[in-house]
Every structure is written in C-alpha cells, then in structure tokens.
Length: 357
Ligand code: NAP
Ligand code: GDD
Image (cartoon, rainbow, N blue to C red):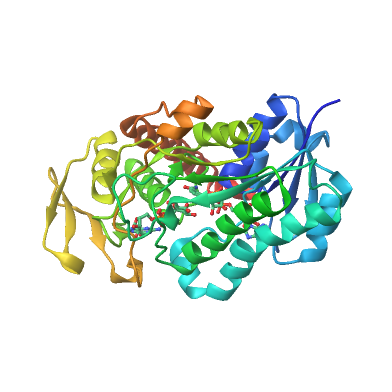
C-alpha cells in the first residue's frame, strides 16, 4: 500500500515541486487548495499535469484560517505525512495584513496539529512545518544555525515563530512526529513574481526581448542565502523520514546581495550595470548605452528590514545527508533563461502564459 501525503500550499512554488517529488516516490498525494475567483493552479498544472488530469492527485478545498476544513480534510485523507507549506508568505505584505498573516501562518499550524489529534492520528501522522530563516531576522550570530536565538522582524516572522514553537510543543507534549524545516530562501522558475529574485529575472527576461521599462527595486544591499527550490523540497521529505522528529536548517552557506543578483542576471543577457547616486536616488545604468536599467523606489522598502541571512546547514548534512548542489550563478542563469523562454511565448501568443495554462 502506498504512503499517503497531504500538502497544504500545494499551489505554491514548493508545493508544486513537492507534489511531483512525492508522486515520483510512489506516494498517494492530496493537496489543499483555496477557492479563488481566477484559476490558481497554473504552477501546479505545469509540474503535475498528467496526475491532475487523471485524478491521481487529489485536491480538496480548504483554508488555513478555517478549522472545520482542516478537520474534515485530515479526517478524510488520514495521511501518513503532512507537509504544512501553506502561508501568506510575502514578508512585505505581512505588514499590510498582519492579523490575517498571524491567523494563516501562526494559528494555521495549530489548527492542523489539532486536526491530527481530533482524527486520532497523533501517533500515525508525521508533520512537517515550513519554518523560515526569517525567524532569525535581526541576526544574533553569523551564520545562523538551529541553536541561534530568534529575533523576527515582521508580522510574517512573528507568526512563523508561533508556528515553529507550536510544532516543537506538540512534539514534546504529545510525542508527535512533528519537525521544523528552517529553510533559507529558495528560488526557481516557479517562484512568485513579487519576490525579489523572480521580479529581477522576469524584468531581465523582458529586457532581453527589447522591453525598456527600468526595474524598480527597494533595498539593494540586503543579503540572502539563496538556493534552488527543487533541492530544498527533497530535504523536507528527508526530515520526515527520520526515526526521531527534529528541527533542521536547510541553506547553502553562501550569501549574496540583491545588487549582485541584479548584476549577474543582467550579465546573462550581456548587459553590464554601473551604479550611480545614493539611497533612493541610486540608479543602475547600462555601461554600453547609458540606458537606465534599475531604479530605487522607496515603496519597496520595509518598515523593518532583515539585512542579512546566512545559514549553516551542517546538521542537515550530517543527519540527513542533505546538501545543496546548484550554485548562485547557475541558479540566476537558469531563472533568467526560463523567463526569457516565457517572454518569448508571451510575445508569440500575445497573452500571459498563465492565461492559457
Ligand atoms: P508560495 O509560493 O507563496 O505558496 C504559498 C502557498 O500557500 C500557496 O499554495 C497559497 O495558495 C497557500 N496559501 C496561502 N494562504 C493560505 C490559506 N489561508 N489557506 C490555504 N492555503 C494558503 O510559498 P513557497 O515559496 O512555496 O513557500 C512554501 C512555504 O515555505 C511557505 O509557508 C513559506 O512561508 C515557507 N518558506 C518559504 C521559503 C522560500 O524561500 N520559498 C523559505 C522559508 C520558508 P494560493 O496559490 O491560493 O495563494
Ligand atoms: N520582494 C521584494 N521586492 N524584495 C525586495 C525588493 C523588491 O522590489 N527590493 C529589494 N528587496 C529586498 C527585500 O527588502 C529583502 O531584503 C530581500 O530583497 C528579499 O526579499 P524577498 O524576495 O521578498 O524575500 P524575503 O527574504 O523577504 O522572504 C522570502 O524568504 C523567506 C526565507 O528567508 C519569502 O519566501 C519568505 O516566505 C521566506 O520565509
């Protein structure tokens, strides 16, 4: 009999890749989706089209803020493994919707854990919580590891802090197999377009096809530990395969600035950027033509910023045998290349790709 997995957030970047991975491993996969006024499964349908078409991937309507739907879905599916990936995951947006973010990202994991207990699955279902390097926020040490104290800097980070601790608490209180993956930023061609990496590679893809709109960004000096999403979802699965539940950092151990990301992405289309001015007046100019490629826009700064994140993945390497492979330059190049292909399709068909997927 195949193992049953339930993925919340299956329509997101990680959810789509994880669904593919688990199906390939022989799991029966169920996913939670939200009702939306327009289709929200374009990422998922790119990755698991046959399984969606033949019904072997089963989708259930629910919402992390709706306890009754959690109870119903967990009770109906009786999963061996739950991957809780659903979240309002945009840090800047969490300042605009702090209470909703607290409910979905903080209390959401509690609702799921309680749903497991109510269904009588306390010692049957293994639980993965999508925790985050945003917990480290204003960092207390560099690099950050599992023992580094937390200091979140946004309503998102604070909500995820509750999610982290309630997972630890249910493990300690009820003996549940509940684990946190403390994942540093991970990216790829399915990354949401409002995260900085995809925003950059989408703009560079458009520039490659001759578009002249400059890219507007906020803090160019923020530094992140960026890895490849497909590698990180394999780590999530490994965490739940351990005999003992525990918490793990997944990271590359390398850090780059937003500015560097822009430079490497533009180099990929043979443009070299020269920076002029300071603060909100800074601009990125094309060395060859003098054209404005990048502008700083104060609207993209956050009320409190996480200036740098750098992870130490030693524990994951030692205990899970997990480590990252794709380096920064290849990650950026692959994302730019995917966005160029996408822009070519859009210009050939005259519509956004999502519209016909
Ligand atoms: P994402 O692309 O933004 O996907 C988020 C998913 O959550 C989507 O499927 C979304 O559904 C769903 N969702 C949002 N609010 C929900 C609600 N109230 N009820 C049910 N579903 C809801 O995020 P991701 O990058 O794949 O990240 C996956 C998880 O890992 C998130 O929890 C994120 O906070 C965490 N994380 C991500 C990273 C990273 O670098 N990517 C790093 C550390 C932790 P819709 O499609 O309907 O919006
Ligand atoms: N989104 C965005 N847009 N960020 C910008 C921009 C911009 O125009 N300009 C500069 N940045 C900076 C942000 O201020 C931040 O310091 C950095 O780029 C990265 O921003 P995001 O790509 O939005 O990601 P994040 O690091 O805030 O959050 C992501 O990673 C977390 C893990 O560390 C999300 O995926 C979270 O859900 C995840 O937990």
